[in-house]
Structure formats: C-alpha cells, structure tokens
Image 1 (spheres, one colour):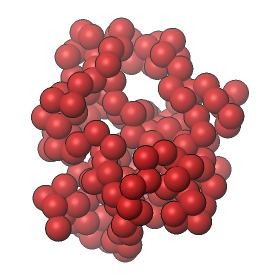
Image 2 (spheres, rainbow, N blue to C red):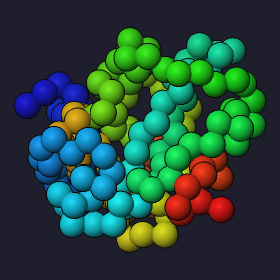
Image 3 (cartoon, one colour):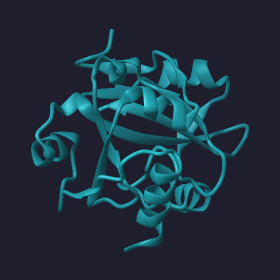
Image 4 (cartoon, helix red, strand yellow):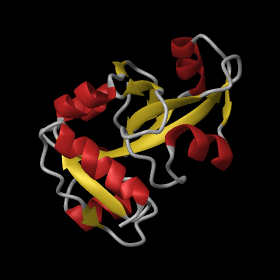
Amino acid sequence: MSKSLKRVRAALEAAGLDADIREVGAARTAAEAAAAVGCAPDQIVKSIIFRGAKSDTAILFLTAGGNRVCADKATALTDEPLGKADAGLIRAQTGFAIGGVAPFGHLNPIRAFLDPRLLDFGQVWAAAGTPRHVFPIAPTELHGLTGARVADFTQGAGAP
C-alpha cells in the first residue's frame, strides 16, 4: 500500500469513519470513476488545484464531477490571481500525485473550497491518494474534515 493511500486511510480512521477504499483501475474521468462505483458523475469529487499567484501556494477546489472551475469566480473567492499548479507544487504541498489528490491527508495545510453541488447527495466519492483508488463519504463529513469554504466557483452541468 502506498504512503499516500495509507495517509488517507489513517485520516478516515482518525475521524472515526469507515475506510472503505476501493480500487477503480484506470478511471481517468469522473464519468469513468462513477461507472466503476455505480454512482452519478456529480457524486465524484474532483480535486482541482491551482497555484495562488500572490501566495505561491496550492489552492484546492473540491468540485462535483460534472462541473468545472470558473476561473473568474475562483479568483474572486481567493482574492488573488490563479495559475496552473504543476506536478511539483502539487506533490510538495499535498503529498499526492496529479490524478490522486485526496481532499484531506495533505502534507501541509491547504486553503480549500467546496462546490455546493456536492451537498445535494447523501454520499460522494473522492480520490484516496492514488489515481486508482476512491472512497465514499457523506458530503457533510467531507466538509468537516477539509474545513473547505462552501462557495459557488463552478460552471458546468450542475452549476448555476
């Protein structure tokens, strides 16, 4: 078991949650991950990371599978211009590789925002520290564990 997967499992167990981590294979999209676990695509939590141009830190946007981050809305929320986060920044700040960034269990504290669309479900699925593993969680528990600010930062099928 990878160190990243172990960190996520430990964070779930420390929170008193079931660490029902499942391997989904080569699910590269929210639709593929949803098909693998039998849920709607919007129940997949995408961890989208940008680089804050002023702070030079990673900023995490937890987004419903069918939504996309709107750059203008996200910039307004963070009060700084946002740029592309490269693999090095993501790995250094979160400890995870691109495609497997979990919503919590990061190596360093991270500023996070939560798509309100995720709160429409009883259960959502998030990356468990690798591109091949996911776990189910209630959105309220996800919100509590991440400390993310619930805010409208999306454009897409489920977004206003």
